[in-house]
Length: 91
Image 1 (cartoon, one colour):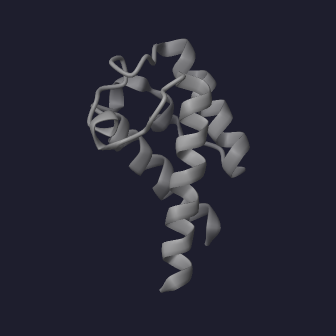
Image 2 (tube, helix red, strand yellow):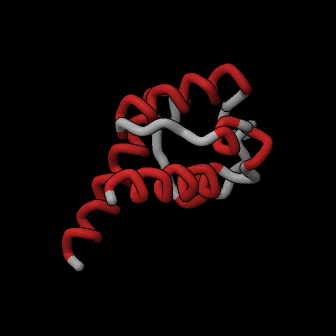
Image 3 (cartoon, rainbow, N blue to C red):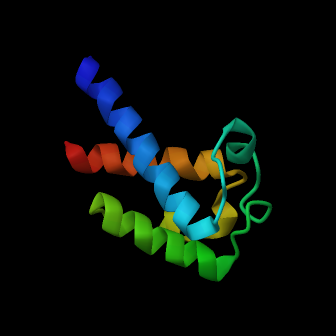
């Protein structure tokens, strides 16, 4: 159980760091995660750059449905999708 909690904490820290570098947000909190992607400054180009940074950070390759910005209403939904993919890769 403990290792799963550590993995989630590690994922959150690494994900937030990548977000801060790519979106230039000062803090990542619950209100930011509830924001839509455009509100936090993502457009199609910055979204692709974020995807590439996350692929490099987590050593994963995203499935086609993750590569479409319009599939995510909020940054939190995007984060959940990335986390599920990373967890699948770990197994």
